[in-house]
Structure formats: C-alpha cells, structure tokens
Image (tube, rainbow, N blue to C red; front, top):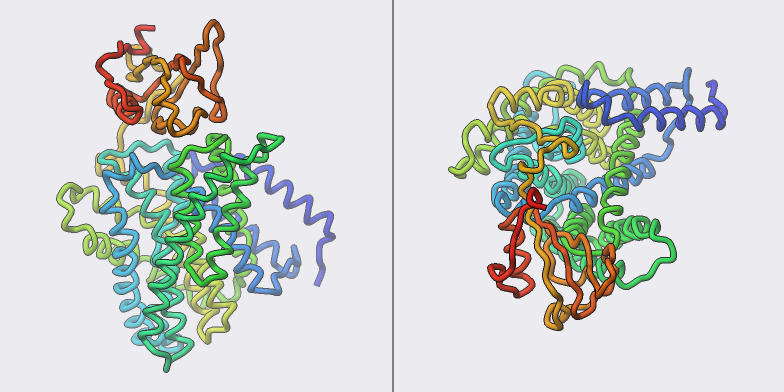
Length: 504
C-alpha cells in the first residue's frame, strides 16, 4: 500500500479547506450536492491506491463526529430566538418529538417488511429494523440552515423558524431512541422498565444540565475580564464542550444538553455576543465539512452495491411516505398550518451527516448487522441530498410559500425602513439590575446606538458602565418592539417622542 507523505496530506487538506471557504457561493448555485464533494474526497483519501489514509479506531471517529455535531447543535441553539420561535413552539416541538417517534415507527415497520420479504439475505429483525429507523429518523439542522441561509429564502407563515427549531432539536429524540433500541438489541433479556427509566433519566438530566450550565456560562462570560476580546468566542467554545462532556459523564443526554445550553446562552445578554455567534457559524460550517469528509473515509465502495437497492427504497419511502405520515400524525390537528405548509414541512426532512454519526455507534459496538446498517444509511442520506436537497427552494415557490427576498440593506429606501428611534434619560431605577449596559432589561431586538454623558458622546458596548443621568439613543425593529423595550424598563412609552429613521 502506497501512503502519501504527511506533508502532502497536510497540503491537500489545506487546499481543500481553502476552496471550502467558497462553500456559500457554491451552494447558491448547486445547493446541497456540494456536500457530496467532501464525502467523495473522504472516500478517495481512504483508498489504498490513492490517499492511503485509514481510520483504525472507530471509537475515535465516533467521538470526532459527536464533537462536530455538538458544535452544530450549540450553534443552532445560539441562532434560535425565543421571540421568533414562540409562535411556532408547539408544532416545532411536536415535530421534534412525536415526529421522530412516528418516523421511527413507520420507517421501522417498512424496513422490517421489505427486508424480510424481498431481501432475506439481510433479514433485519423487528428490533434491528427500529434501530435502523431511529438512526435516520431526524432531520439535519446544518443542512436546513445552510440551504435557507445560502439561498436567502424567505418563507411565509413562520415556516423558517419552525423548520430550523425542529431540525435543531429533533436529533435529541432520535439519539435517545437509538440508545434505547440499541439496549434492546444488545440485551434481549434486559428489563423494559430499566431501559424506559434510563430513557427518561437521560432526557431529564440532559435538559437540566443544558439549562443550568448555560445560565452559569452566561454569568462566567459576563464576569470574567479577558485581556483579549478575541478570546471570548474561544471561551464559549470551551464551555460548549464542557456542557457536552460533563453531561455525558453523569449519564444524561449530551446532545440535548448542548442544544439547550446553546439555546439558553443565545437568548441571554452576554459580552461579545455578535462576534461569538459569528465564530460559531463558521465553526459549525467547518464541522459539517469535517463530518462528511470523515464518514467518507469509513465508506468502502465495494460494500455498497449489495445494499444499494434496499437503501434507495428506504430513502424513497422516507421522503414520500415516512416523513409525510409522521408530519401529519404529529401536527395534523394544527389548523393554523395549511395543508401546503405541512407538505412543505414534509419535504424539508433532509437527512445529512447526523445519521452517519449515529451509524458509527453501531459500528463501534460490533452489532451483527452494523456494517450493513451503515451502508444503508449512506444511501438514505444520498437519496435525501439528491432529491430533497436540490429542490427545497423550487418546492417552496411551487407551493407559493416563498416570499420575495428581503431588500438589500445598502439599497433600501429610507421610507421603507420601519425601525423606531427614541432616547431617554437613565434613572436610578433603571440600574437596579446592574450598571452595565448588558445588565439592563433591554430586549434583543433593540440596540443602544449612542450614549450622551454631559457633553460627551460614547459608542456603547455590552460592558459599558451606565451612569444615572446618561441619555441613551435606542433603535428598535419597529414601534411594537420599542414599546416592549420601554415596558421592560418600566417606562410609559407614550410620554416619549417617537420618530422614524426616515425622519432623521
């Protein structure tokens, strides 16, 4: 076997990383199939006649994939805004929980039927069928987020926050189902009560750890004074890993913990929030690239052909039957969501690298049908990428659910800007929660643009100390957002003169 020198491997990796920086530009034209490029690169790199790279320890690859997924989930939590999600919290939560359970049920029964009827050489048992179904039951947040943002999609009826919140949180339920069925498959005589109890233990402990450690993280970030502002995003990255690993050590669901941790941090005020979120956006993108490349290295093309037919059939069933049935079973009663919207929600059931991460759990635990399941998952992901990933924006336009893209901020006319601007004088009562700007009760959709202190004008930051008598110039999204801001500050909004940006 000819192996490339380490220097050549590093050079190739650097070149790949360089070109991957143009990811967004590429996805604007070709959408998701660009992900396949990195998957194929992984396959080529592991080929004994080309790259000669080999992953000898499956536990390491599973750990690498899990850490990458934790970054993506934490980033998803940071991006989710309660004020946008609260109107769709019920349907998105139902999709993230019941939707995953129903998907596992319908797809598991289908796998059991076709494997035992048409593919006796594979012949999954019922428990193995549900185990495989749980691996492919969740949608992929990184893919959904990448498509919506790279294409600049604007969807009607709050569909975008609904789908982003669902895809960001449903990996947790799929992971819990995976562990549950894995225990059933490995321990046929184990107590059902113990396994169900372990399921709820992981759920509760994971949620508590995520929330409590997320709150603690915000306090730490706001209290610690770093000598270099660029270190704050790195501090947050370290905190996300601590949440993920600490929860796993005590037996909780680490995926749930890291997502709720990100959600808790993202909806709190903390120093250098914008730069930290931008940092995680880029890092989550890099993690997605790494995941596809790594799992490409685990794929042996020679082993794919025997399971290609059943893998494609399962992928097609999920798209056209399993996911739609699960959507209608979980949110069919929601009358405020139209039938067209439900169809679109069904179509955005993208399967990405997450199922491959889950499949490595099977590989590393030496499940009898583990390798077969892993190869089938590859085809399920491939079908989803090629069929759904390339057509999301087309289906949105076809169903007339796509709004016109938002106008470019640089060319928008002043009279079209709906932002509201006001100023008020700080009193002692406004500083009762703290004397730093970030400690004041100012919502996320309002910013303090300028501080007048006597004859001085200050550009504010989150750590800026506010004095009694300071005059704050505030800008909000619209009049309603400004009214909410004044309500939180305990001020009667009507007594202040309001004006539009267009009047300035």
